[in-house]
Length: 462
Image (cartoon, rainbow, N blue to C red; front, side):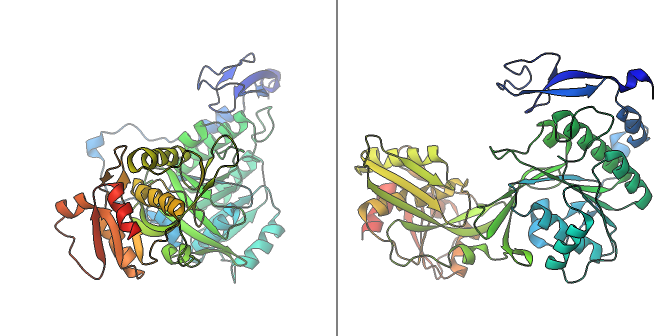
């Protein structure tokens, strides 16, 4: 290597978008973030430029109309909840980024998927940068009975050696645990820096695309909950998955934020056990298993995540404020949306909530983003304020507008079928749905159509 190639220079890189500058800036010109620049040492002439040429494809341009269209090849991991979120399995040659809080189960899920793929005869290389091979074996003995014959483990953080191992082994699937500890020696910065994460992820992505090797990359998250490193990391990969859930709760949720080969609305539910992550095939029954009987402020809402309906319990609590300013606190629901619904109850319904603290909780660590849960949240607050329990066999759904009108929701039939399957016998729903839908027929469940929140509340008071 020439002497000029080994020289380094000091640059300032934005932690949010990766924008580089020769001097420190208070505001990033790329993303507009404040105080996001950190000092890094960068190589003047990185060695990785030659590796990029070796990893790039050699195909010539072709006409789009001449390409044969077909279904992409997928590897089924054997974990149905994981495959559901991915859109049916791991696409050959795709790059998946999995992020989540420390200790939530990212490495456990990746190792379980690797073992299941290895049992199918798929050659998997698990690159463990944070644990030794012996430590990984101890975790594998806990979650699987017998490791697969085609699963290989290596403890390495040097990207050049990792790429050499991939060339030597020729695996069909590579798992990197994690991208924050992998480094490229040609760069002068330390592992986990913006330039290292960006360069290593770019080289791994080129390797996966050029050779048709699927790659699962585990990433750390910041204290705000976003994946650590430059935002370009999420743009490089094909799929971005987030592992969600309370640290002291047994249930974990896997949600797709970006997916080039499937829907981003699917949700996978797992339970953390001593034997690893177990699939929760019926989350509705799990979330409602400990519901209190005849408790005010407790309602059940049938929500939809992608194509999957399930029922969650919404709990409301209203009490007189002991301070000069009232508090609105939520867990699993948007606080701004709760403030809007409380304002509707005050202005349109006449409930005196101006001196009341309002607390809302969604049981099970689920975060509600479906607007169909608006009516359930509003009635949960009203039920808690009036101290009027709701029947345990009743579900509520509907979107609430500023005029206190109850609007229709999408995919009503799957929601009703899920509620009826779990034994619910009454549903308060928008009246517009019964007028427009011809496929909704009276069955074992009693349908109570309402046009306003007041009508739903009047039915609650009976």
